[in-house]
Image (cartoon, rainbow, N blue to C red; front, side, top):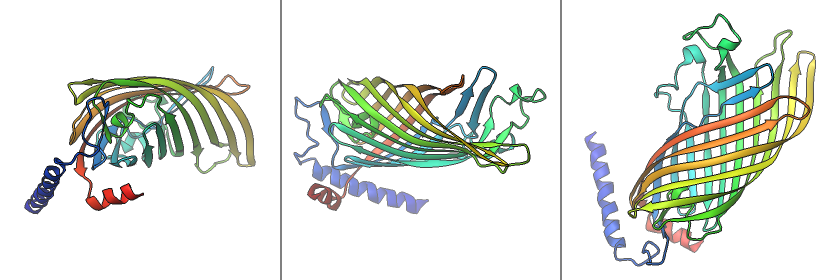
Length: 341
């Protein structure tokens, strides 16, 4: 332990020396009086966040309500940000309550990663996630003998894969998307902007369980394209504190290929369905020049009515996310390499 403390002290010492050296610079980190954004271009951001954003599945018909959930209540993310590039790794912290109840809910494996490219007016977000192992949360509706504490009906081979991208554009140059998304900038004066975006994702829901006689399983391949337009605003309080609000309604199309597996062979159907989405975000935080932290709530609701059926697929999520981070001085060689690019 003492060697770790010594190493931390050495790193902090040299970091402070760099801070003193940079304090005489008049580069991009100096804020002109008429500027709304402070660019933290000489720093590397390290951020740890924790979120309740899990991939849940639900299907509603006239006669049935199916609610499938993974055996995890939260995910953690480790992020590395420098200037316009942000990379994150998503994982399940098994030691937290709600993430390890294998006896009654079965095992769940999951993870993913994300890549953000954030420019002055454009935002490009790419992500991948995988979740395997679900249980039927409303087991009592299908098993009258079930009681709280009994094992749920489980689908250990049910897998959800999600590849997603968002391309967005901000109209107001005084509003910083990066200040609330990646914390690679600071919003120093209140501002807002109209932000249209295009969301596109390819996701697969696949029950890979081995078929028994008189049983079937399904796999759906889905392509979703949604065009949205919303408004976001950041209210700055006493320079470093802020409140951020915004919402984006959208409409689009989902193309679905549904494969139903029977012991005798597969039956394939194709559908094209309209989708309506609403994405909202509200949060508050502290964004100092070194330390930053905050909490956000995000809501995402969508409804898809399957073609020529009464089935409505719903996906409603209320996500709470907290994060904490620190900015380190970027090495001179790194800054020089990026500046030359």
